[in-house]
Length: 267
Image: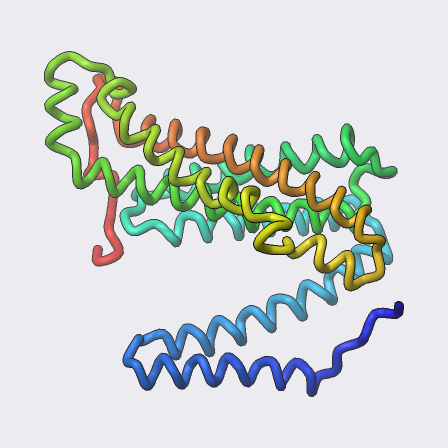
């Protein structure tokens, strides 16, 4: 069955739902109407732009352009992770941790998948590399941002408890062990829940897109299983790395908690 092409009118009809949602937010005084409108427009512009960029990449398969595109995606994901935190690490440290965590969780896993699992030739083929990297970045940044946000928030709220443990002679690793474990669970729970519900409650996006594009359902399922495994592994690695790095920044070499390195949204 051929893919049904969408027209501009079809998209405008769908966008009307966002106007209804914004109106509902205004009526109920939720204060979300401006964000709904602005972010809907932003999402539309970003996707249209990326569609044009991907067309150029697919036609040229230029490794330099693919690397440039991947780097832009990485830095954008790192910025999103940093921006979602209520209490941010001051200076470039917080952004560096976010970006490095995304690199470990997404770039390395994508490279492994392309070269070892899928074995596509060349390994940087844009129709495989860019979608895989995009899915990993988009999903793992949720887990990493949740974990980092909870880490900084819990250290701030439980400062007295942690400092008492440090005064008793514990290292920063032992004093914050319970907090760090809780943060890691928080970061990994969304993907664990997604795996539990996949196929039974929800049909994941990649599989749905492939089926709509004409791919046999069984083949689409195989790719979706692969992607879920990659996202879960990437999220786990990213969360562990982000929590460890956050601890290294907020505790000094003498195992003292340094919360002056944090700033809240109100600062």
